[in-house]
Image (tube, rainbow, N blue to C red; front, side, top):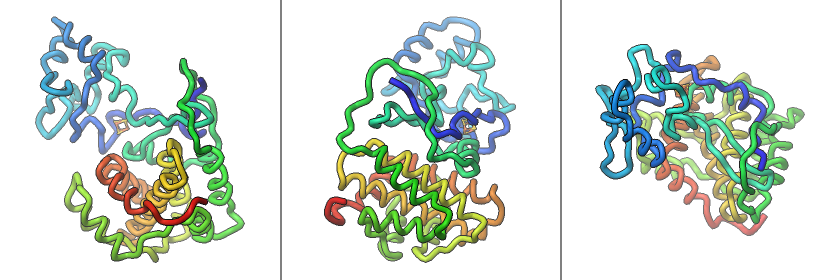
Length: 305
Ligand code: SF4
């Protein structure tokens, strides 16, 4: 089966030591069983350090070093496993991050997650979110999807990319077409208060949510691309109309939250918007509990579309 990705995917390359929010800091990195088995055979050289850095209680993972850094991240922000042994020796999470995969009727799809600052920069600054290109091949067939989410996504992207209409009109038309009842400010803020946060300051930041947030014109393209990304990521592997509407509600909520952050933080340049989108992704999309809580708020709203 072919693997497809949005056109911008091919521009991604980890910026390693230039990254200000390295994914090798602050997260416990689980090691898949095949790689853990390989690491446990290492007896000398740098391999011995790798074996000794593993905690095999429960799911094998690297024991974090000071300041929650991966023990293999050197002072220059480079990975010593790559430097000493090569990329082939990375565990699955390190090899794949920030990629995510979905099965659709088109085949396997791969995207870049916005919590990675370089991926976020590419997603928010690139054209071509609606153009999917083959980027590889895999054995097997995609899981059969009852709902044709590729056709639904194409329909949404036609509306979203129609620059003859103001951005807000396009965005609201998508919401209307699929019968998504968006949250009022009180419900949205209650929901935001109830979420878990990696950084407690972000709870306060996110409470600036406003359903009337109207962003400056020069940031509308970034919002459009962010919404396209959320839809690609969260509305692809979806199995029925209720689930689709809830997933789309989640995407529109994230877009409105990003718009609110841009307004409340007075984000002026592209870099400010990218950083706010990265924070949003890290706090919301990369927390299964937060994602589930928001999606649940959009269930059982209307009849089938
Ligand atoms: S967050 Fe992205 S750019 Fe930064 S180190 Fe990780 S993969 Fe590389």
